[in-house]
Length: 477
Figure 1 (tube, rainbow, N blue to C red):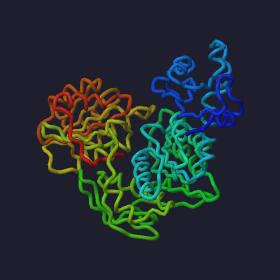
Figure 2 (cartoon, rainbow, N blue to C red; figure 1 turned 180 degrees about the vertical axis):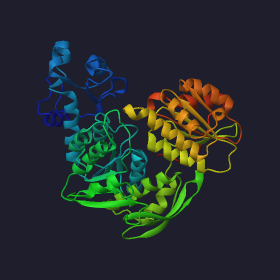
Figure 3 (tube, one colour; figure 1 turned 120 degrees about the vertical axis):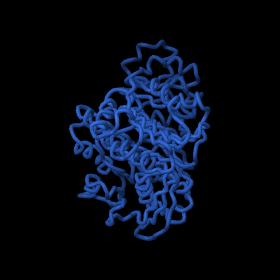
Figure 4 (cartoon, rainbow, N blue to C red; figure 1 turned 30 degrees about the vertical axis):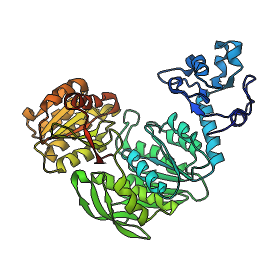
């Protein structure tokens, strides 16, 4: 974004502040004064942990040419600072208005990706596929919420020919708001699973929230990319005003996988069958869930006329993102599936299935952190996860923090040996134990919700054995 102050003011329905040149160009936009770069506009957001209005002077000192603040806070600043302030009713709403204006000015096709599981991986594959033909802006890291999405849109430049953004949500109405800002013409829904049940009464209610992406698609010819293997998602095609593309293993899917050849940590090969082409493809991300993620991306990429040639070239190059199923090998001659970034019942089930399916290891060990935001169903969902892990035939099960104790109990109830199970109050304690416990030939899966900080286990292993060798393959979900 290289807009002038005059353009910024216009998008907000204001005039430039007296102490700012209307022709001054911005280097970008920031909502965090700690990493603000000189020339970036600072927007003071009153968030759940910090109030950006406290850091207005620091942002100006760091090189912000101007700051967006709430009108109600103008009295907090002396006259010299007020001369460089845009005053608005709501700074978060201003961030969205500015992002929407930039997106509209850019004016090209944008895809939004959501889902309970797999949205990050599907987004990365889609961006890579479209990137084989065009210059693509993609959302980075966890910039998928009401703060991160507009910041992604504010990075749009004239040279970008397409955009792929991730859209997360934990409440009804969030996706609708993100759609108002991003105006996606293509919407991908990977699946609907029982996550964020702390904020929803049922999985059906989660489905209604996910459907907001499909209902919020913009443009005269919107395209919804829907999982044919998920009945809730497949129903999103009903009464949809645009074109629906389906993907999955179901024989009725428009983009489907046939003759799937699982290759453990090496990924998978499959025949991709589409309405216009069929080709044998190789994917270096392990697990059947990633075959579906690839199909979702291939279906969406077809909107940009991406086909078999790009698929054959791109898919073997896609690697798992950090802490999202990356397979790491340590000097102690053991391997770790590092999926520490987050967890929920469906994602844990997929990764446990992967762990149990990989042959050639002395022991297959599950280190499962508590799955947060599951509400009153949390104990039973953890027990079910434990029963599922026991049935899969893993060799050791360790629960970490909170209701992960129910996961261990569920495994034992299902017949798993209590001598091969354990529970730790936190990830630091688990990391200390596992650094002593792992042995040559082991395969360890590390997975848990963000709040459990399962990366402390990875840090303990790295402290004992040194930095791992990261495979160019992965199991990212």
